[in-house]
Picture (cartoon, rainbow, N blue to C red):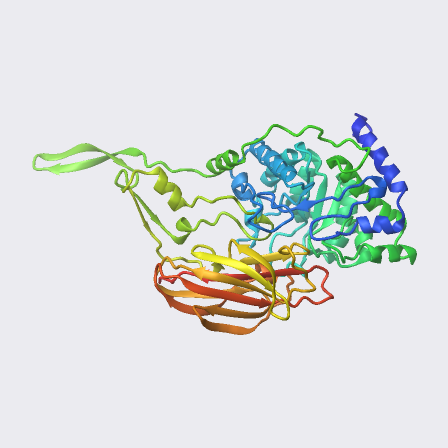
Length: 564
């Protein structure tokens, strides 16, 4: 290793390949490489032996490039649980497993870890992040990054920086003093750059002290790259990049997703018009090619990891992290000294009793979450595990027969959930004439098709409506609530009766409200336990040509009868 540069001989060899590849590219190819070709990938450049770079969410698993239960993933406990183990070595093992999952799904870059802080109970995405403490977050995050990259897969530490709440996340300007910025918000990123040398970073939607993070030259170029020596690639959060010139000058390497972004053709035009120096584009392309060389998709460059680590049992590791993440309270017998009053006076006696007055051998389990386990958060923390064992199922299997009693009780959650238990659904795609052009099974009430990830035979040009249809067999008798999450025209029919046939509009200007907004209740139907009814939710697809990414997303939501 060179003491001056910190580079090893393989590093220098990769840099030589990168420089040779960069030198043979024209401005159009360079600008195209910095812009997503779709939802999850960058374009291949065969003329320099570069394959397409594939990215995937997320912090607790590797979803892959398709948002579907047909491609299941290992689901680890939440990052908050991982941090609660206080064990960077265990975080390393978790990262190594996710590298294994990424390679299985042909993914080169994992869009994780999330190292923002738990700064408010209203944060909204805390299940993706580790802790309120920057030191613990930095230590666990370093273990995680080292583990992932030990498997030859890149990480993108996110969301840089001060992206610690979801409220107005596209427009919020977080005013932070220098000391707070250094000691809290930047600290986990700095520790991970120093201790794990991540190959990527993701810049956030928000602004810090007046400048949006995808254009923040001071925080990205001066501090991240300058002071800390970060040499990886900088990718925008999805749809965060807003300005061609300000983004490239602010140190943003890649604008995602594609195909229409502020880079690509707009960047090439800006260079030709003299508004952007080509050297700034070269710096960004160099970072992308360095990443490609590290993960092994640039011809002539040896990847950092040539032999993957030994295979890890993912389900066993998930259980181990879960066990290590919580404290189990034992109801131990304790001694109590008291007085017993008798006719012949007061005498001291010793009572042996457990701390809690529980009868041995019995368990009472209460709550909707025990029956329908919530093991995932939303957004980038969503994967599709092959199976989920609820607390009710697990305890029923583990305890002696008759020793467990269960009651739903009162569910404090007022929001409707994705239609799941008791539903048997399929998706039917039709053209404007009403003819069926494709479809398939739907494992739940959520439809989320991004880019060209459509059912076989279906195209955006031909698609006019998507119908979720099937049956629902209720577990409980009483008034069941059905609802809709999404934007646009919907028709909701339950048991032959149409309850909603209107346009559902957004309450606020947030392009992700379709995925993260609150489902709107649209029908309440009295149903009988065990008696199936037909359900249908039809959505009219209306995607404006102006939107940069074609996404079809909506959800049939449901809620069991409520108890006061």
